[in-house]
Length: 169
Image (cartoon, rainbow, N blue to C red; front, side, top):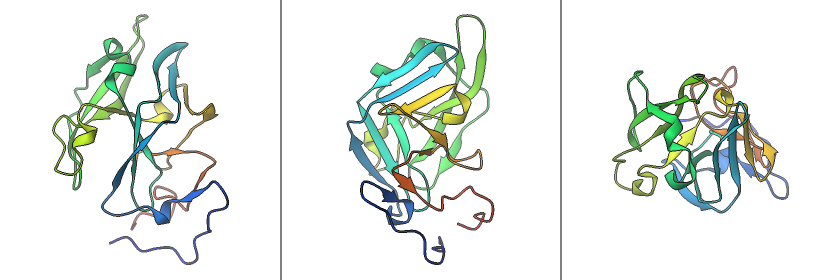
């Protein structure tokens, strides 16, 4: 169970509080423009996005595979993880034509659990593992802590799990 911090800040106009997100997580369609670039190569550029919103976490953006450079992604040898809600996630490494690679830059659910079928085959990226990830032109900040793949933008307020002192959330 996640314990709500005492008096989290209330969102202002055009903002969302991660403490108003549901548990279990919700999948919400979004038409916002997402762009991912690494070492000058556009990895993804799309408005076909879904956001997964979960209590205390920054939104995780799932992109349509048709708008991602799949030719630059390879299955990662790092194994899979299991989400209690979404199921088994597999990871992908980014391999650029110059041989540069970024391990476990993205993940996807091939066969998500019931209620999360919309995520099937879509890709989510760690913002901190690429040079640039943007939403509507705003540079994204990675969710604190390194494990979670949420993207923090100015319209999302916390506190957000992953920050120091949030281990029990």
